[in-house]
Image (tube, rainbow, N blue to C red; front, side, top):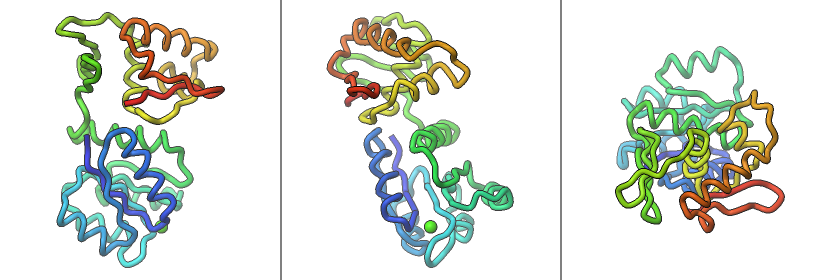
Length: 215
Ligand code: CA
């Protein structure tokens, strides 16, 4: 998993991002102004920086030329196209506008880590190995047959481990926005995963909400 620096002067947002990234297995460092961010970058070389634009000391735009090759995702309240283009032209990998949904940020983090080859490729637990490249699951050397949707659901749950996901969110992430079926599809697929892989204690039902993969 990656080491991620969060540069955001709003303490509650910084903590929330840090908490969610930590839950899914990353390690995080936090900075609340430009100069201390620069110091952390120089001493700990993170894999990714989540960078607010409006910061005390040095702005995100001032900081980005100083971070070298490190991938950056800008997070900012400034929704204007001009700022977006400026951020991207300065070399940011991506851009998230506040207020954002945490799932959206986590998804972008994943994409950037994949693109910069710092992503997670394999997840192991309970004698199971999830190979995220070949999209296969192995148990004691042999492959466990999953349908493509079962694999996608398992992958989504595992990559968002320890975070509760609603049925609606799982539909959106696994089946796509335009899926017309109902959310019981999720329950059916969860049952299949629990049965095939013995994940009854890992995939927890969150009352009146959805599911959480505990690891
Ligand atoms: Ca700010």
